[in-house]
Length: 272
Image 1 (spheres, helix red, strand yellow):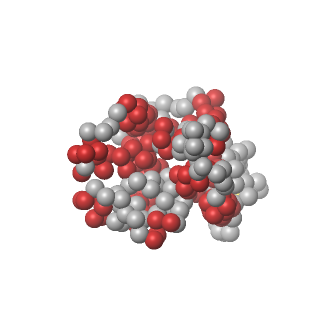
Image 2 (cartoon, one colour; image 1 turned 90 degrees about the vertical axis):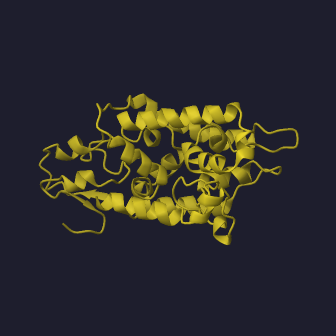
Image 3 (cartoon, helix red, strand yellow; image 1 turned 120 degrees about the vertical axis):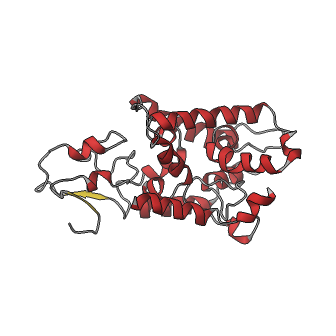
């Protein structure tokens, strides 16, 4: 419950421009130049900041190929400090997936090879489409935002379309595709824990690369560990903390620590 409240508070604070939802307009204040840690779309009417992936692709897809060192620096700073703690506690789409998974129905596990799809998403949609597949004037599309990102559809496109009849008359096959992706992820999130995070999210993958070195992480006291397997049983990502501590897939939910009977698992810098 503590994690859930942190997720809710961060979601509300990141999308605090309530007026935008009523007017169907995007907030364009100075704070929009700053990136928030999670997958919170720039186009969300209430968003006070920008999505780091969207910002990165916008710069990379400009007529003169550039790299935003500001965004890259932020991603590295976020990753070095927190790793995928951001996924578990600060991402709005992560909150939605957690709530959907609470719906009572039969649950399934993700076929492990599907977890590697997000590597292809990062390379192709985030890097190659903006920089290689450009138009006649040299501009590239923000591939991930345009073709995949469910956060942009749920928090941005849908609220804006509801308040703007002109936009509704202009939607086409691309929006239909994005709705198909969103609905598929919603259904999948009910059945499989955080299916988007595990299979498609390039932002989580970037943060995961820092999991083993981030300041916030987990530690294991081998002398206390009795190999009871309790931590592995509660891990919804299907990791074994005893052998896969700070794995790239770990979203730092803390379930393994809370269920460790011998207090062998702990957060870095915290004594138990």
